[in-house]
Image (tube, rainbow, N blue to C red; front, side):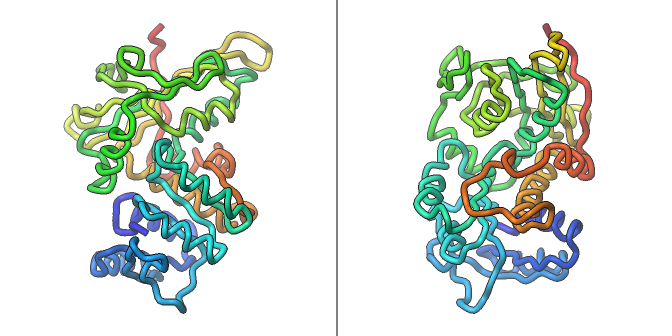
Length: 328
């Protein structure tokens, strides 16, 4: 669903590359666009979907092995379609502020199908990158994620609509302070986000699933995700918008000595390749194409995916880790 958008078509292209024989259905409202994407992929079909219908407008005799919502499924008909047929479901557009219906639907039909809630930044790839960096720690006290989203790289109309919907739902940020999940507003939510070239952009803490995912995966008592929209370092150099996330970790190493790391996760082609990679990794895992098939339940990316494997796939897409300066 949403297979003609940037995230959906990018994920489909990766799945075709990783698993050449995997059948794919590109579903969208515009059948001509869907057919063009399907033709480019090869071994794929196109379908028209109607998100207002419980059957999605799909023929009754058509079968699938999973449902991927690469767009805002406001009626949750894609999820219900998957549950009624026992199919894995993955979504990326609910965000922290909109996951309650998915969680309730999964709880009410706990044995129906696996649900992967991947509405994290770039479909969970940043969480997985942070957990990969955390492997050298014995204890993590503080995690700070600082992300720059280029204003020309919001992901098309669907991505822009998601950002607007989330900002309407809440202007507060969710942080963890002293082990307590806390909403912050006003000056407490504001923060400068430093780009890879040293430029500071005005940003703020946001309500995002990455915070509880990292908190519960690492037990770190202090976590914050700051976000800025503006010109990226790639565009300031005269190129296309680049993807930039800084990951700062503080804690102790295996010997108990203080340890602090600062790294940038960057991609010269912007957020699309990493979002597509996150979706493709989730689909691959749900279908048992890498690891065992997933049993029914509600999952987040870090609950299913190996961070080291995910980072390897990110690198294949062109992403890289670079050292970040110590700003203390």
